[in-house]
Image (cartoon, rainbow, N blue to C red; front, side, top):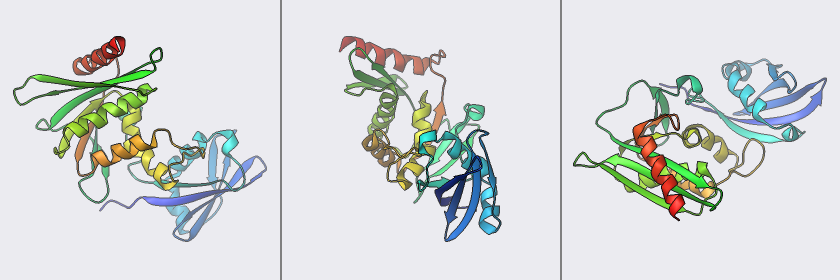
Length: 261
């Protein structure tokens, strides 16, 4: 049985001798660490069962602290976060692997695998944004029952290429809402990391980031989260503009749509 993720609360206490003194609480127990922004290093200053448990996740804790902007370090700042064994399942070192997002049970299970299921419906997605026209377009491509490629697309009043990428995946999942096993091929790290990593901490903090700011496009992320429920999804990331055929087709049509609107 895989260990349950740890839901913790971080509290920044005070600054002393070049270090921020920070408490981390979990199920009524408290551990203490000190963190240097200058050296980008952290160290546990407490002992006990929680401290020993958290040491297993020291890299995750350090990443959270290193990603916080300087102006978000102040006495009294609180942040809820999740520590888990499948932390950062999508990284540069394993970006060629398949990322499994299995939400057929009460909570998602996320892990990587080397090979994908050939029998699954595969959908290729991409999105584009025109700063000149202040519009976005998306396209997704799949093989129909006659083994012919079929393309679907749309133009939206969205001012972000990342959001266009997200809308492409949402549209694809909506098109195949009754399909429980599906493979999504995308060149968007934003989409994959958002649903497999970031969204859990956002929700714990009432849709606030680690900087204490409201998450952008909350409503669309909520729609995305609903769209993946009950599904087994294999995400595959491909590098943009790398001559990947299906990704290039989606990119081409998304950009052409923007030229015509």
